[in-house]
Amino acid sequence: MKFNDKRIILKLKKLSQNSYSKYSKFSVSSILVTKKGKEFYGVNVENASYSLTICAERNAFFSALTSGEKDFKRIYIYANSDKLPFPCGACLQVMSEFVDEDFEIVLFSKKEKREFKFNELLPKRFKL
Ligand code: THU
Image 1 (cartoon, rainbow, N blue to C red):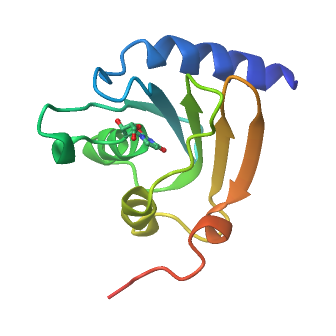
Image 2 (cartoon, rainbow, N blue to C red):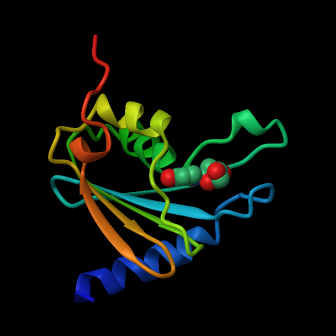
């Protein structure tokens, strides 16, 4: 494990304690990194009306956008599970407004790490 991963994993684990996931019990946290190295956080927030749930990565994007950031380099997504938290189609479509094909998506579960370029996960994005 690279040194930098250690810091990020510790931060992701700590953040995942803020996940509000009482229905799925699938806690997700995410750190979005701008091209200048600023970091923005998100966790998943569920609701008794299930479809109102917001994923961790979308919350990280909305937080960064709220602060006026628009240039993004990488997102880390962590699930407190043996399963990797592949971003859902809705999150990929939201990201697609703001990232280029080389945007890095780094996934962690409790067991493994995998890295992708945005284009590998959403090769044909919808754009107007
Ligand atoms: N979830 C995320 O927050 N990000 C992902 O990448 C995958 C799924 C959340 C949504 C829901 O709260 C829970 O995980 C189970 O689907």
